[in-house]
Image 1: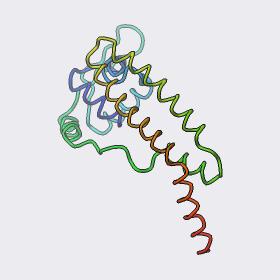
Image 2: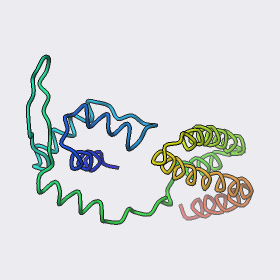
Image 3: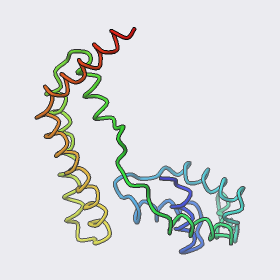
Image 4: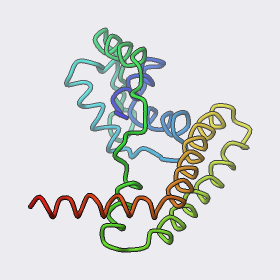
Length: 183
């Protein structure tokens, strides 16, 4: 996801300086993956350059100046277009997990251990998210639940794939042998 729209949304809600935007991002949008301050400031510079935000106020009590940003009319339009447009359904057919399975099988390696390691990684992440879900904060619980549903689907896929490794290997061998005959 583009940090551009996340920051525009946070600034639309309330004109803010960069550190405040960063703090609100960390608290409201993704408490498990804190955004880095330099990333926030560089994105704000681009938003200002592109006319999507403007400096509403500059304060300099002590230390570096604090620029408070507000969203512009163009920023409002772009944010609304993004907000009300559909999110592309995921996942895509080309995934890292599938690619690893195919490449391991092409190399003649057993994928069972790789699938077990991935399963353990997923279960570990699910334990973390379950704790977040039980934190008592409804917004974080909803976010954690979304991630848990996706991880559960991945786990089902890992089981599905593990049960079909031999069939996948046969089909890959058929493709490889067919390609060799053509060359």
